[in-house]
Image (cartoon, rainbow, N blue to C red):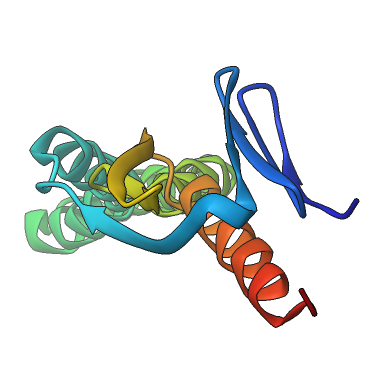
Length: 155
């Protein structure tokens, strides 16, 4: 028996696809397909907020430098304003690294739910619905490989 995918709720092997305890023998599955759900505006708004949080300190630094030059005050005041602005801009680096990590994870999770469907004994069955794009792709490909291996095996 070959295991194509295995986690807490889904197991895909060369003999069966098991989802939350329900087993579907691979020999009885004739087709697999997927469906994408509607876009999640909550996820997109979260990405926008992360983008704004990454750009915020840099924007404030540029505004501070421009303000320091525009005020045309004493040299000490101008240097102080520009210095503080540069420090704010430099502080954005470590913060941006952490925010980029969250931003990257949001793309791995996806912005819409996805479903894996199979035709089992002639009837459509939804195996899985998940917003996690990475997990969806792994499970979908595992089911495809299990079906392909079964169909190419000598009977």
